Length: 173
Image 1 (cartoon, helix red, strand yellow):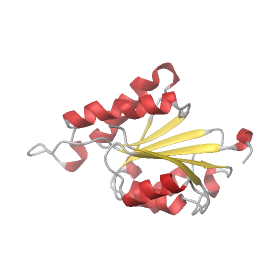
Image 2 (cartoon, helix red, strand yellow; image 1 turned 180 degrees about the vertical axis):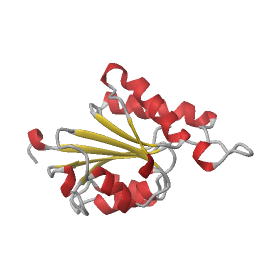
Image 3 (cartoon, rainbow, N blue to C red; image 1 turned 45 degrees about the vertical axis):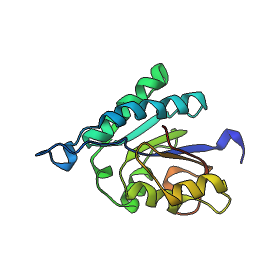
Image 4 (tube, rainbow, N blue to C red; image 1 turned 120 degrees about the horizontal axis):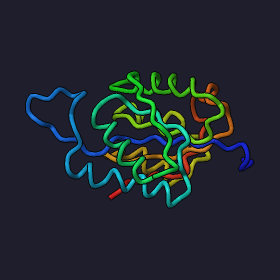
């Protein structure tokens, strides 16, 4: 892949959430562990030069809080996230449909969402030439705060299946 044409996709599961009594799923906040681990994701991305220029975030409170911590670590390089209702409690197919509408001016896209959709999407997109360690990591377990990084040379509208190379899978701890 020519470095000039490579696009990156970061698929992140929200950080660890709490289960307060009487609070609906959409409004569940992060647990203390989530507040501790979410910034580590942003720090890793910054240290590895994988900085999103566009972020799509589920509208759920725990994903919004995760996104805030990631962006805090990215500092001045953080883009303004876009909340996306369709990323909450949805399928990989719906997530991919949202991604397919991202403008091609976006070079590095981050999506912050939920299981099982985020892992299903990662498995769907991973090409046969993916890094073996990254693929095995995302296939076997996708815990809270985990994210996978993919590279591809297609337009966002053309992403469908097995057409993005998994290059990293990271669990911030």
